Each structure stands twice: as structure tokens, then as C-alpha cells.
Length: 339
Image (cartoon, helix red, strand yellow):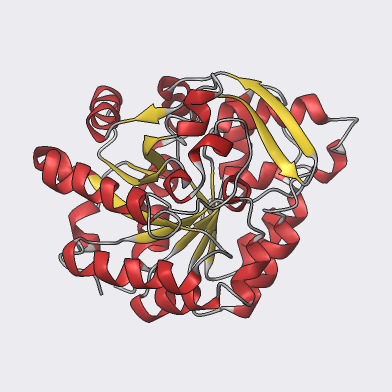
């Protein structure tokens, strides 16, 4: 287990954002996309302004392992002489240094997660994580398959040592997941195969599963599975725009789209023990061109704010707000409280 991991008791009765980023995306900056960066200090002051006590935070992008010249034109290929010794290794270390070495006065606000690539340089990733855990506390693992352009299903073969690392330390995994569209990297069907193969791990699936009612039902009955609300406002807008196209309305929970506050209330009232609040800060705005599969790209142009995401939590009644914004996050990160 990592050094100095803070206990669950430190966070009881706190409001917790389970999904936030610290760091930079060189690709986004080079291509004029938004957002492209966030500091720990900037996130901490957003949280303080909105009454949020703590956040599970992880790097924004995996790019220092890749060829930076190709990355600037949208191609993701490992560099011949990478800056980072493995995907996310440099970014994970920089997150820890920023939280604990550069801004120690703010460190009690953070539950740092590391990021992993499901398929590339697995032995090197594990070796770097073992070095990192000796120096800094690791509270969980984030997987964004589409951002890595590595299929999540590879966690069951090439990437299995990463799951072994997590299981051996009781670390939870938060996975970017989509049930719709052209994203071949993060498909919910593949994610559920990973979950079913590893019942000893705790998982949280990001972005409300885009409100897909069958996958939400499956998540709700699984004892080791939660779903977060990261970037709630723009996820609702995206799904509402896709109705009649890539998304059938009958496949989604019955709610008042595109009113994201109404959808949030319905989602949490329907699945009170499963939903966890998260903001996706700063990616509650998403203005970019993203590769979904080989030769397949999608343009996104959505804008929300931290205040919008906090409003989604505050639309809930006090008891439900405490569960969604606190207890459920603690159960995911630390395991259910048996007391």
C-alpha cells in the first residue's frame, strides 16, 4: 500500500468531487482546444468557493510518452525517446509533486488517483507505479481508454498486471465509459467484461453511462460498482442532441431532457446507492476534435462551469445530497463502511 494514504474517517461528512483533473494537455493547447490545463491551486480555490471539501484528482492527459510533434497534429504514437518512461509516469509524478511538494497547504483537499494506459508498456507502467507508491499516497486509478487510444478490453490480457497492482492494494478504478456512438476504445460492453472478470475490485463508471437505463440497472445491482455524474450538464446536452440519431430515447432513463438539473434529480432518486457526484473539472467544458476509432473523429463544442456542476448536486435534498456527494464516494474509494 502507498505511504500515508489518508483514512476514510478523514472525509466523513465532507462533500467530495470524485472526478477532477490536474495537469496539462499539450495536444489540446497545440490544436487550440479547451480546456487544456488546470493547477491543483486553481482547482482548490474553485472547490473552496463552492463549498466542496475534497476531490479525487488525476492527470489530464498521457502525452509525455508520445511523439510531441505528431501529437500536435492529432497523431498519437510513442516517441523514439519519450520524455516519460511509460504512459502517464511523468504526469502521475507531477500530480503528486504539485499536491504534496508544491502546494502542501492544500494537500488535505486531495485524494490523488494515478492514470494508466490499458495496453502500452505495461511492465514499465507497473514499475513506475511501484516507485511512486513508496513516495506518495495513491488512492485510486483512473482509466480513459479513448484518450489513450487503447481499448479498455486490453485490461483482460496485456494490461492484466495493472489490475493485479490495483487488486493487491485495494485500489478502486474509475473508467471513462460510453454505451453509445463510435468510441471503440471505451465501450460499456467491454468495460462490463472487465468488471465481471475482476469481482474483487471496486469500479466507478464515468459520465452517467450517458443515462443508458439497462447499463445503469446492471451497475445498480452490482456490489462493487458505482457510476459518476462527471460533466453532468454537457452529458445531458450531448445525449439530448443525439436522440433520434446515435441514441434511442427509449434506451435512456425517463427524465426531462435537456434540463440537466431535472435529469440529475431523476438519476439520483432512481439509483441513490450507486450514483456519485463528480465535476470532471475542468472538462465540464469540452471543445475539441477527438479520435473515436481508426479514421473516425467527432467534434465536440460544449461549455459548462464548475458552478453548473455544483448546482446539480445542490438540486438534491439533504439526505440524498450527502449520499451522492459523500457516502457513495467513500464507499467506492475506501470500500463500504461495515460499521
